[in-house]
Length: 269
Image (cartoon, rainbow, N blue to C red; front, side, top):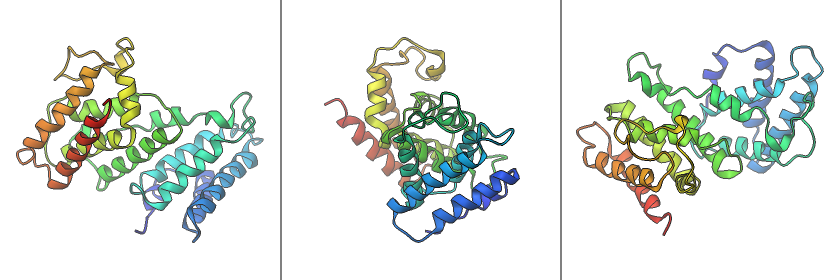
C-alpha cells in the first residue's frame, strides 16, 4: 500500500523541518529490507541531531525530530513496513550509548523528549464528534495510536496515561454513534491488542487513585487501578457489541471487539 505524506507536507513546517522530512522520507521510500531501512533511519536521526546541535536555537533538535516522526506516523497504517521501520529505528536509538549531542544529561537510551512530545501531540478528534473533523482525521488518529501502542509494547514506556485515556473515552462514557464511535472502539481495541499484559499489570498494581487516570461517568466508584476496572472494560465491550447496530458500528469493528475480549479473557489465567 502506497503511503502519502502530503498531510505532513501541508503542515506548518519550518525550513529545517522540511529538510528533515525530505531526508526521512527518502529513506522510507528507498527499496530495501526493513532492517537496513530502520538502521538508516536511525543514522539519519543521529546525523540531523549532530548537524544541528551546535547551531543557535537548535540545541533541542531532537524534540523537533520526534514531532516530525509522530506526524509521519499519522500517515502510516498499522503494521505497514514503514511503521515497522520507524519503530525499529527508535529501538535502535534506544540501544545507543552516550549522551545525545547538545544535551547536558539526556542519554539516547532514555529517548529524551519522546514521552513529552507524544503527550503534547495527543489530540483526540472524536471528542469533537464528526462536525468540523477534517477528512481523514479519524484514520490518522488510529494510525497514531497504533504507532504509540506498538512503541509501548516493544520497548518504551510512556506510562499508562494513553491507553487508559482511550479506554475511558470508548468504554466509560455514554457512547456516541457512527464513525466517531467506531474510531473510539477501534483505538481502544488497538491498545488492548498491542499492550494487554502491560495494561493488565497496571490495573493489578494496587496503585492509589490518581486524577490523571480518573474513571468515566459510567463507573465512578471503580478504583482507578484495579481488576474491577479491567472487568468493567470487558463488560462494556460485550454490551456495545450487542448494541452495535443501534450505534451504527459496523461488523469489522464488532469482530475486532470480539478478538479484544478473547485476549482480555486470556490475561491473568
